[in-house]
Amino acid sequence: MRRLIAAILLATPAAAQTTIQGDDTVIRLGNAPVVESRARAAASSAAQAVMRGLDKLAATSDDIVLTVGEVARFGPLSITMHDCRYPKGNPSGDAFVSLSIVDNNTQKPVFEGWMVASSPALNAMDHPRYDVWAIRCKLDDRTPSVVAGESSPLPIMRPEGLAGN
Image (cartoon, rainbow, N blue to C red; front, side, top):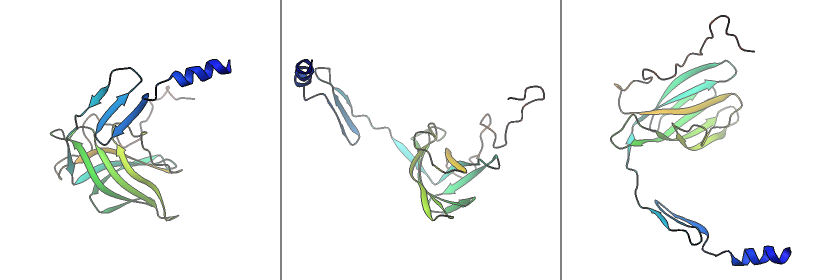
């Protein structure tokens, strides 16, 4: 049995690897065809971002408008936005926000990196009481913080008779 496993491992080609080089992706899987992607999605930067903060203990949420380089406070958190990017020509498209978040109680960073509006769990902040996630990029003061049809910052109340367990 050991010889069979060793023979299979030795017969596996060394080219069965994935290589990623910057924006160009080359995937090689044994004798499978090579898949290459040279397309780069164009993105634009915005001066502001709309974030939503949740206090899990008080069950309240607030929209936070951030400007590049400024520090905003949400509870004991200091939030600094470095950049907000969106698909070029589509400001209402998926936002990518670069943030630094520091807990002022402990003076330790709780988040550093990019948050993606369409996938908040992809790179989430880890804090026992507070949660912060990206909503969209904001181009100017005429851009609304909350768009019609978007989730309300207020908690949803259940009608009588439909109370959950």
